[in-house]
Amino acid sequence: MNLFRRPDYRSDATQFIDQLKAQRPQLEAKQREGRSLLWEKSIDRSLASELKAGQIAQKPYVYQTSPKEQAGD
Image 1: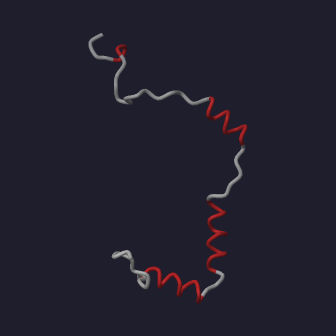
Image 2: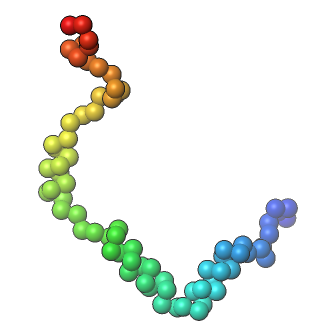
Image 3: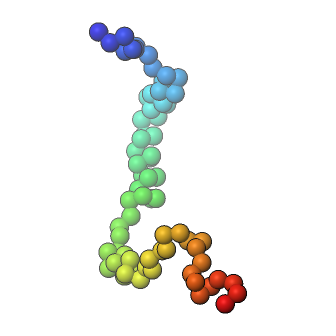
């Protein structure tokens, strides 16, 4: 037997969400529709590969000056 198990406990937030979903059954479908507008986009793979090929490698420490840029030269 697990001493920390609380099978009958449901938080206020969980109860609220369950109640909201029971009152509005179309809510979950609208959530999926909204997510699809922002996250489920098709990717142009040829454009993505071109963008990746055009990237320049970043220095390990961005604010390190190179010897040519030091003052006094």
